[in-house]
Length: 163
Image 1 (cartoon, rainbow, N blue to C red):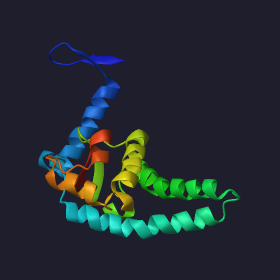
Image 2 (cartoon, rainbow, N blue to C red):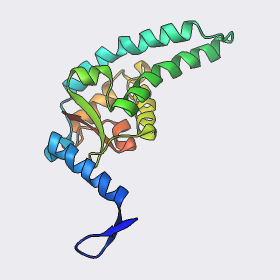
Image 3 (spheres, rainbow, N blue to C red):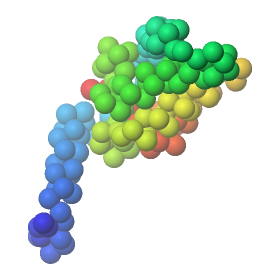
């Protein structure tokens, strides 16, 4: 089913509904906030999320019936990343982001999906890798990018906003 707007263009009801959701989100957070948040809030949200993700990794990973140490390590890594990707895909934020009033949205202000949350989580593991100068690459991108995005945000086309 489609409807015509004043210009005569046909649009589906789903398109209209998505536009309405986006406008309500922008009214709530403000279009200027899509430029991103301060990096300090993001940093402390990550500091808060690390022990939660590691606890989940330990509780779930330690009981995994995997005898191969390499596969067990990969399973630990998967559980760690799953904390970030699952919470962001379902709630739009992790516990740390919730505590600091942050939310992950698409560059156009919509809710993020599974693909975007997985891309963000995978890139976070690279950007915050101790071998690659810890979180310095992520911090530099957040500090110097126009929309305060790290590489994972740019690839996933997301932005972290204050709500």
